Image 1: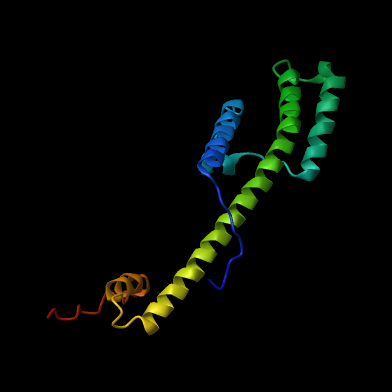
Image 2: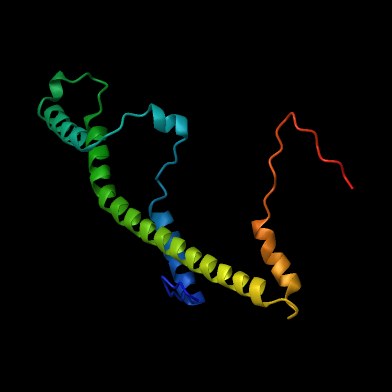
Length: 159
Protein backbone atom coordinates (compact mmCIF):
# COMPACT_ATOMS: atom_id res chain seq x y z
CA UNK A 1 0.00 0.00 0.00
CA UNK A 2 1.61 3.24 -1.12
CA UNK A 3 -0.54 5.59 0.98
CA UNK A 4 -1.24 5.11 4.67
CA UNK A 5 -2.11 8.46 6.24
CA UNK A 6 -3.59 6.83 9.33
CA UNK A 7 -3.56 3.47 11.03
CA UNK A 8 -6.50 3.11 13.38
CA UNK A 9 -7.99 0.20 15.26
CA UNK A 10 -11.36 0.59 16.93
CA UNK A 11 -12.28 -2.51 18.84
CA UNK A 12 -15.88 -3.48 19.56
CA UNK A 13 -15.52 -2.47 23.23
CA UNK A 14 -14.18 0.96 22.27
CA UNK A 15 -16.99 1.55 19.77
CA UNK A 16 -19.54 0.42 22.35
CA UNK A 17 -18.07 2.82 24.94
CA UNK A 18 -18.07 5.70 22.42
CA UNK A 19 -21.70 5.06 21.48
CA UNK A 20 -22.66 4.87 25.17
CA UNK A 21 -20.91 8.20 25.76
CA UNK A 22 -22.79 9.76 22.85
CA UNK A 23 -26.05 8.38 24.26
CA UNK A 24 -25.21 9.96 27.62
CA UNK A 25 -24.48 13.30 25.91
CA UNK A 26 -27.78 13.11 24.03
CA UNK A 27 -29.60 12.46 27.30
CA UNK A 28 -27.86 15.40 29.00
CA UNK A 29 -28.60 17.64 26.01
CA UNK A 30 -32.18 16.54 25.37
CA UNK A 31 -33.36 20.17 25.57
CA UNK A 32 -31.44 21.10 22.43
CA UNK A 33 -33.63 21.96 19.46
CA UNK A 34 -33.43 21.35 15.73
CA UNK A 35 -34.40 24.20 13.42
CA UNK A 36 -35.61 24.03 9.85
CA UNK A 37 -33.70 25.96 7.20
CA UNK A 38 -36.51 28.53 7.08
CA UNK A 39 -36.45 28.98 10.85
CA UNK A 40 -32.67 29.32 10.82
CA UNK A 41 -32.85 31.90 8.04
CA UNK A 42 -35.45 34.00 9.90
CA UNK A 43 -33.58 34.22 13.22
CA UNK A 44 -31.30 37.05 14.35
CA UNK A 45 -27.65 35.95 14.24
CA UNK A 46 -25.28 36.78 17.10
CA UNK A 47 -21.64 37.34 16.23
CA UNK A 48 -18.79 38.60 18.41
CA UNK A 49 -19.94 42.24 18.34
CA UNK A 50 -23.52 41.21 19.00
CA UNK A 51 -22.43 39.20 22.03
CA UNK A 52 -21.05 42.34 23.70
CA UNK A 53 -24.23 44.19 22.71
CA UNK A 54 -26.41 41.50 24.32
CA UNK A 55 -24.33 41.44 27.51
CA UNK A 56 -24.62 45.22 27.83
CA UNK A 57 -28.37 45.13 27.07
CA UNK A 58 -28.90 42.53 29.81
CA UNK A 59 -26.97 44.65 32.31
CA UNK A 60 -29.04 47.73 31.39
CA UNK A 61 -32.32 45.80 31.66
CA UNK A 62 -31.32 44.43 35.09
CA UNK A 63 -30.22 47.88 36.35
CA UNK A 64 -33.37 49.61 35.07
CA UNK A 65 -36.23 47.10 35.22
CA UNK A 66 -38.77 49.91 35.72
CA UNK A 67 -38.32 51.27 32.20
CA UNK A 68 -38.85 47.92 30.54
CA UNK A 69 -42.33 46.94 29.28
CA UNK A 70 -44.31 44.85 31.78
CA UNK A 71 -44.29 41.79 29.52
CA UNK A 72 -40.48 41.87 29.08
CA UNK A 73 -39.11 38.86 30.96
CA UNK A 74 -35.71 39.87 32.35
CA UNK A 75 -35.33 36.50 34.11
CA UNK A 76 -35.77 34.66 30.79
CA UNK A 77 -33.29 37.07 29.16
CA UNK A 78 -30.75 36.31 31.93
CA UNK A 79 -31.44 32.57 31.69
CA UNK A 80 -30.80 32.58 27.92
CA UNK A 81 -27.51 34.45 28.47
CA UNK A 82 -26.40 31.99 31.15
CA UNK A 83 -27.41 28.99 29.03
CA UNK A 84 -25.47 30.32 26.04
CA UNK A 85 -22.41 30.99 28.21
CA UNK A 86 -22.60 27.41 29.53
CA UNK A 87 -23.24 25.84 26.11
CA UNK A 88 -20.47 27.62 24.17
CA UNK A 89 -17.46 25.71 25.59
CA UNK A 90 -19.33 22.42 25.05
CA UNK A 91 -20.15 23.42 21.49
CA UNK A 92 -16.52 24.36 20.82
CA UNK A 93 -15.19 21.02 22.10
CA UNK A 94 -17.82 19.07 20.16
CA UNK A 95 -17.01 21.02 16.99
CA UNK A 96 -13.30 20.28 17.40
CA UNK A 97 -14.01 16.59 18.01
CA UNK A 98 -16.38 16.48 15.02
CA UNK A 99 -13.67 18.01 12.81
CA UNK A 100 -11.14 15.37 13.93
CA UNK A 101 -13.65 12.56 13.31
CA UNK A 102 -14.42 13.99 9.86
CA UNK A 103 -10.71 14.38 9.03
CA UNK A 104 -9.98 10.83 10.19
CA UNK A 105 -12.90 9.49 8.15
CA UNK A 106 -11.58 11.37 5.10
CA UNK A 107 -8.04 10.03 5.59
CA UNK A 108 -9.26 6.44 6.05
CA UNK A 109 -11.41 6.71 2.93
CA UNK A 110 -8.47 8.12 0.99
CA UNK A 111 -6.22 5.27 2.17
CA UNK A 112 -8.87 2.77 1.07
CA UNK A 113 -9.29 4.39 -2.35
CA UNK A 114 -5.52 4.56 -2.91
CA UNK A 115 -5.09 0.88 -1.98
CA UNK A 116 -8.10 -0.13 -4.10
CA UNK A 117 -6.76 1.76 -7.12
CA UNK A 118 -3.41 0.04 -6.61
CA UNK A 119 -5.09 -3.39 -6.54
CA UNK A 120 -7.10 -2.52 -9.65
CA UNK A 121 -4.00 -1.34 -11.51
CA UNK A 122 -2.13 -4.54 -10.66
CA UNK A 123 -4.90 -6.95 -11.71
CA UNK A 124 -5.59 -4.86 -14.80
CA UNK A 125 -1.95 -5.02 -15.89
CA UNK A 126 -0.73 -8.35 -14.55
CA UNK A 127 -3.87 -10.29 -13.80
CA UNK A 128 -4.69 -11.55 -17.28
CA UNK A 129 -5.16 -15.31 -17.36
CA UNK A 130 -4.60 -15.53 -13.59
CA UNK A 131 -8.22 -16.22 -12.63
CA UNK A 132 -9.09 -12.65 -11.68
CA UNK A 133 -11.14 -11.69 -14.74
CA UNK A 134 -14.41 -11.52 -12.78
CA UNK A 135 -12.78 -9.45 -10.03
CA UNK A 136 -11.23 -7.11 -12.62
CA UNK A 137 -14.61 -6.65 -14.31
CA UNK A 138 -16.26 -5.95 -10.94
CA UNK A 139 -13.65 -3.31 -10.12
CA UNK A 140 -13.84 -1.84 -13.64
CA UNK A 141 -17.56 -1.21 -13.14
CA UNK A 142 -16.57 1.69 -10.84
CA UNK A 143 -15.15 3.57 -13.84
CA UNK A 144 -17.89 2.96 -16.41
CA UNK A 145 -19.07 6.29 -17.74
CA UNK A 146 -22.56 6.78 -18.93
CA UNK A 147 -22.79 8.94 -22.00
CA UNK A 148 -24.97 11.96 -21.60
CA UNK A 149 -27.74 12.04 -24.16
CA UNK A 150 -29.05 15.46 -25.08
CA UNK A 151 -32.84 15.77 -25.36
CA UNK A 152 -32.84 16.14 -29.17
CA UNK A 153 -30.48 13.24 -29.85
CA UNK A 154 -32.15 10.02 -31.00
CA UNK A 155 -31.32 6.89 -29.05
CA UNK A 156 -28.82 4.58 -30.76
CA UNK A 157 -30.39 1.51 -32.32
CA UNK A 158 -30.47 -1.57 -30.13
CA UNK A 159 -28.73 -4.60 -31.49
